[in-house]
Image (cartoon, rainbow, N blue to C red):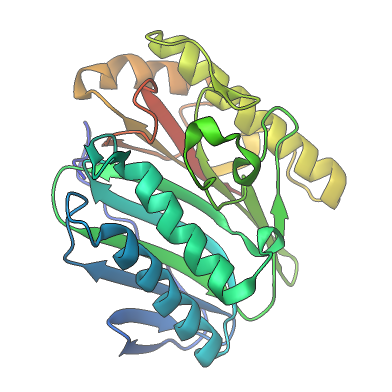
Length: 281
């Protein structure tokens, strides 16, 4: 996924505890005594008939791995695959992905909404199915947003199976608090707002993030309370030409001191131009 503007950056996760590395079920992972980070890559194109089944098996492999290693609680997942808005075999590829993911959670857990992690799903420029994830030994608190219908309760107009993710996940390790914020766009209730209006979509998305931070701080009694508590931000843009305008708006609305990475990628709805995600602490 191409980075937009600035010095090329790499995302690095550091641990103050000893780290073990391994590979199982085709998944590479690193873990310490509290947390596991893993990556799964499958060479399957969304245009293939087996794409949906491959998504299901990918998630079943992830869930089997983390349970077997003793990190049974998914906190955060990133999903990337090409042609996310294209249609194949009678259904949009994002909706096919959502159905495959749902089938895996249902098969493993049955009624599973309380176990759904924070997540993002973006369209990459090439490659197959790439899933990155964080899991822990103890569960986090999965959060929803009062401005938005829970994704797993979306009406049927968005596909035969609703997307399986929470709006955020709060995890405490000792005195440390981390809020993993899902990909967030200009959606209020379940409907897209401000079609074809880039800056208005960005403002609405950040308003959603702000309310999520405020309500999490109130309900979970955390120190997190607003956009000033963001530790990092990722901004996905459908069009590279929008980078300068969005960067300027983010720095005005959030602050230039919050580290932000800008990437070009397709958003899961074809009428969305921008999506944001982040970590607050």
